[in-house]
Image (tube, rainbow over all chains, first blue to last red; front, side, top):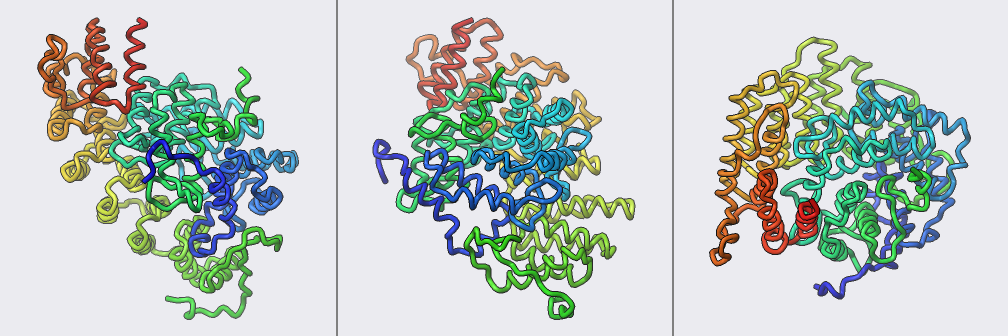
Length: 320
Length: 318
């Protein structure tokens, strides 16, 4: 095992890993995750973008694929012939934004997308993910973020969404997937980021939440998502972005977290895993890089903790 | 029943490639023959909006191959509704699928849809029907977020706040694993959620006792400390955090450290130390709080030294 001073980010290996994803021969696993394909494309694209090698992937091919996932109702599915869903719709819009191609959507198409999103909001302010009807705070974030990126976020949608989010605040300062749901770092991220977009961070019990978030760092430097759970590289994003939005990221020991992420790398074939010794995947590769970017390490492209996009694309949203 | 029990001559299956409709090979993948065959027919039937027994069989096969393909779940639900199938039998089918694939989280929302449909058609549904499956799934992974969220939905739907069976369940779960944060969260939900009309002084007292006993079993377990603070800092309960001081001193007495530094202070819980610092601050004894934050940063919880310095520096600047 490498001494901590010898650990570093295997940048070229990770670029190579992402590029190779589409060529993966393990077919069962590949179509087992069809329902995540558009999200996976976003994770892969963001990875090479953060690594400052955005041209490593076939941009035209990606855009074509995104458009293949578009439905007539304006929503995007995760893969052709999968129902439209809020989560994949956000990934689609984010990808187009990163590739400077939002203008490929006509005004009419954008209006349809907006309609698809807003039609999924319930009277209590929550959102269905799709017509299957599941409700979850993650879908509020995907909806709000998407509407903001399309410049179509209305006060009416905001007020209702904030009302719902506030009901999801728990006794321990955290947020769950719905009112009373267990506090979980991923849910905290989507709630805090939503409130940031809506300019309503004021409703948060900040001292208690900050305390809860800082407790996620365990002795080996990694972050977990809930008390008494194992640390996982993906929380390098969920926890750190939440703290960043609250301007308290520095409460985390960056050096120790950095080394935890470094140790989770596959320095031979590229990619990052949930923790040292485990198999890599594109999800953890992206979140590991996003965490390192938030901490300012390795000369990565800076990432916006609210919109999960490169900061140069979101400056217009921080004008006030 | 199986695919072979039906005739398929009347339809042409869709071609399954990675490319969608444009025919351009974007993702270069190879599907297995079984998947191609089954999906080909299923996609065709979906596009024809055919809600039939043979379509139902196909959804069963596809769901077993690719359990997270939620479009297929939606299609199956549409078929169930159209054919007016027995919902209790469908819940059984869903249970078999759940047990075959523990990571499948689609099933919980599907069960909600089925139960709501059943209530719509038949009036009453017994929530106890769900307990065996929940018990099994929680037995496999006692912190499974989706299962706990589902149990919470049952409590809401059937008004099971402070229900005897629910209390028995949560006591069992905490006996098996006192460190299970999901269980602690559920406990708070069934007792202290706004929808519980029975939040009495006795209940609050009982829960404080329960929590203190749990802390005594494992003083460095974060969940009961969060639970205790959740009770004490709830404005509606009119409690005083300072009343906890004698209890806290059992797990974190720094007096010797402060007085002559020669005797090793008794610190068996950083959480208790943290609350003690809060109380000292409320009592205008900030130097003691600052001392605690330094102890935590330097000795007892150094991984969070940035946080402890932050708390300390906030006090110093006052």
